[in-house]
Image (cartoon, rainbow, N blue to C red):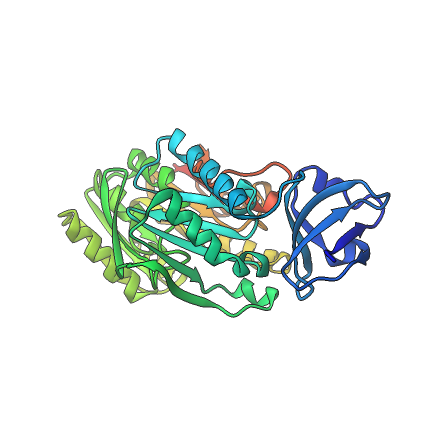
Length: 387
C-alpha cells in the first residue's frame, strides 16, 4: 500500500505556492507502507490533495513533490518533462552547451542534467531520483541521442539522503575533456574531475558581459578553468588568472592555447593573500573579477560569509585604478541579494573610494528561478565602477 502523507495545519501554504519540499517536522501523520524512495501522496491536514513525490525517511526533506495531478511517474512522464525542459532552452537559442534540467525549476526536484556538446552530465541528489537514474538515462538517450552520459553525483549533499557520492559512466563513451563553444570561445570541459558537473554554465551571459568592462590589465580571481579570463582576453591588454588549484590553472593555459590567446598568465595562490600582497605592493589593475565559490552552504555560515565577501571586495576596490571596474559575484542562495549588496556597500565605505553600480545580473536563463522556491535563485553578479 502506497504512502499517504498528511500535513499539519497550514503547512501546505508554502507548497501550494510552488515549493516542492515537505519536511519531516511538517507532517502530522503517515498512512500506508511502501519501500523507501517510493512515490508518496501528500495531503493537507483536512485531506485536500497537494501532490506526489518520492519519500525518504532518512532525510529531513521527507518528500519532494513533483507531480501535482493524477499523472504517474513512469517513463512517459519523464520523457515529457525532459523534452519540455530542453524545449525551453532551445527556444532561448541554446545549442552547444547549457543546463538542460535544473531540478525544481523544471519540475524534476534533485535532478540536474548539463549538455556539453554531444555529451550529457547527470547529477542525482535524492534517493528517489537515484533509484530511477537508469530509466532517466534511457529517456535522455531516446530523446537526444548523446554520444555519452556521465554521472557526477560526487556531492556531499547526497549524504543527507543516505547516499554515497558517485561518479560513473552511464551510457556510451565520454572523454576526459569535452570541447564546447561558449560566446564564440572554445573551452575544454573537465567532465570527470572538474568542479560541479565540469563547468559553471550559469555564468555564461555574465562572462560575455565582462567583455564590456575588461580593458587594460585584468585580474581574474577564483578563475577556475578560465571562463571569465578568456572572455576578458578578447578585449584586454593582459589577464592574470588566479586560483589556488594548479589543475584549474592548467585548464586555463590549455584553453588559452586552444584559442591562440597569448595575453593570459596564471598565478597559483590563495586569493585573499594574493589580493593583500598586491595592495602592499601598490599593484593596480583596470578590472578585477571576483567569482568565488559559495562562502556559505548553510544559514549558520552567513555571518562568516559576510566577513569573507567584505574582505575580498574591500581589498579589490583598493587595487583598482580610478575609473576601473569590479565584477563581483556570490553563488550562495543563503547570501540574499539584499545582504550581498549591503556587504558591498560596507566595503565601498571602508575602501575610501567612490563606487557606482553599473549593472546587476543573475544566473543565465537556462537556470531559471522558480517563484516560491528561493533556493533556485542564488547567483548575484554586480558590476561596480570604482572612482
